[in-house]
Image (cartoon, one colour):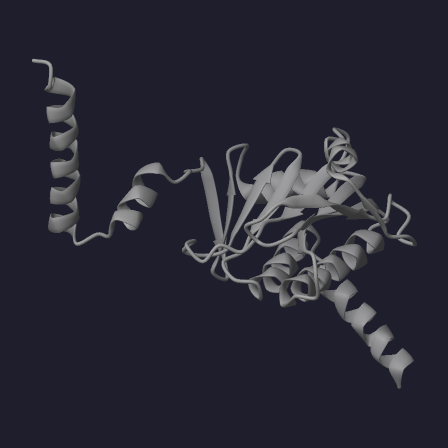
Length: 214
């Protein structure tokens, strides 16, 4: 039967349509349920899902909190866009908390021309916290491939996600927001999951800023 592969495709599509009809599921929802990534361990906190394949997220985070060097690598968009403000707020939280625990940090913001566009390069402080330099993609990739540091990344928002996600591995943490303004709140919960005094440290820093402005 020369058309057997074609008949097989028709059967597959018919079965797919039948499942959609019976379950009242949209194609995108079914595709997501069939092919979305699953994790060995999950923990939920205030509507945010912490996930890991390396162990329970809380255990992996406890181990990461003991590390001495962190690369802070959120996304950014070229131009004055609201996303950059939300990212900046999260970065400030991170710098306050890691600084309060005497951790070494290097900020490497991955800059794109749009949320779905081209990676242009990175804005980095080279670990000094006193300078900001734009570097091209090859140099940026080299810095991000450092193996002796924990990489803390923030991904672009994705409205197709059911809820914000924090993925944890033995060498990295990635925040996956649903919408832009998720970023500071999710990051705050992450900081608190890493260090129990994170809220106190951020609060003291905010008080210092307010006092200096009065």
